[in-house]
Figure: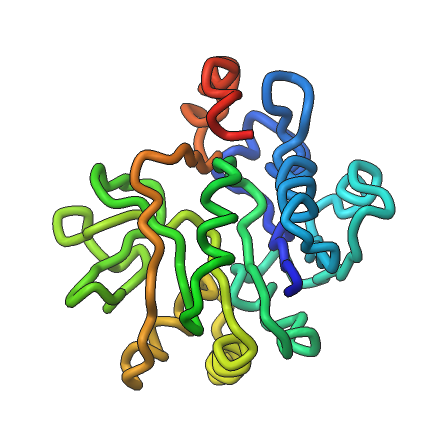
Length: 235
């Protein structure tokens, strides 16, 4: 099992407030989001970790040192993360965990998704649907749509930005990413939408009440100073 962390983006919604990659935001003024993700992965025996960098990539390297392997994506400033993931297609050949780099989550979520046997499993949170995150539609216990095109009122859950693929699953994700090689605007979940249209089964892990937070807006950023009270729940 390998891990791919996508941290190339500009973080445009927060660029007025921070001038560095979102993944370097500190939790409780101590540990950065991306360092925490790396330590969580290593705690589960995942030591082959690729960090796909772009915006101010030298700061990511300074933060993580030799803990991970780096791949620089030069076109980060004019594309979305579909192209970021496609840029590392040469390593999409073995079981993989793919993560957004701006998420804080309970380690139990990672443990649970690694135990899932299905070829493609997305971590989701049902219940309150968030308008500022990626949404999913579920039918017969399978994901039938994912993305910002899923309206809040029609959604069944939020995608956490954490997914697990078997060797078979990552092989076909790569194939559908390549079909979108001229698509510069979408997240890599567009490839998953296309797979669904071709009758691929996309499974999910509902995290229920386990802790998860995505840092996307000023409100999210302000909430970090109160995360301490949940520390024992998500470490």
